[in-house]
Length: 196
Image 1: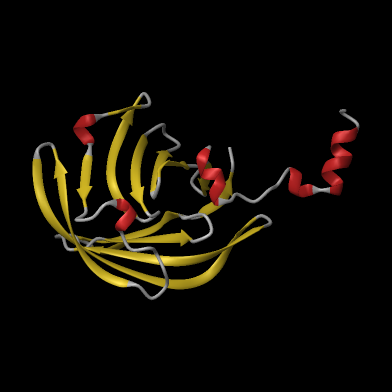
Image 2: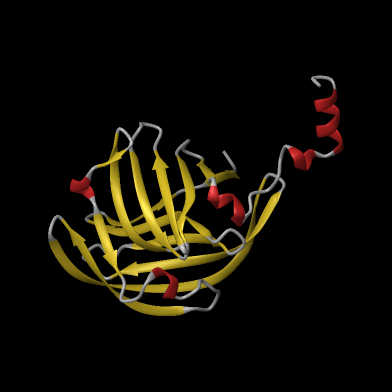
C-alpha cells in the first residue's frame, strides 16, 4: 500500500486536497491566519455556528454566530472551559433562523440587547453587505461578500467580515476604531481554509 498511495494521489490530487464544503461544518472547518492564530468552525445547530479561536500565545475564545455573521454570544476559555465571568450575550429580536440571509446589497439597522455580568444595554448595529472578488486558498476559490458592522459606541467601532456563501461562514478580516492618537485599523489575513 505504501507504494500505491503516492501513485493514487498523483492521479487524483483531490483525494488529498479536497476543498472544504458546507457539509464539513459537521466536523469542522479550520481557518489559519498569517499570525499563526487558528479558528475552528463547527455547526452547533441549524443556522448557528460555534467558532473557537486559538491565539499563538494559547488564549482561546468561543463565539456563537447566527447565519454565519451575527454574533450571539462570546466567551473566553480557560483550559478549554468557558470563563463565565467573560460571557457576553447578544439578544436579537428574532430567532437565529429568522435573521436576514447574508447577500450583496443588503443594508439594515438592528437593535440588540447586550448582557454581561448582569448588566443589560441596548446597542444599535448597522449592517451592510457588498460583493467583493472571490478569494482563493490553494486550489480552492470561493465567492465572497464583505460585511461591515458599525457599532454605535464611543469608539465608533467597525468590524469587517468576509462571508463565503458556499460555506455559510465568515471570518473577521479587520476592525477599525477611534483612539486618542486617531483612527486605528487592525487587519487579519486569512492564509488557509482546510478540514482538520
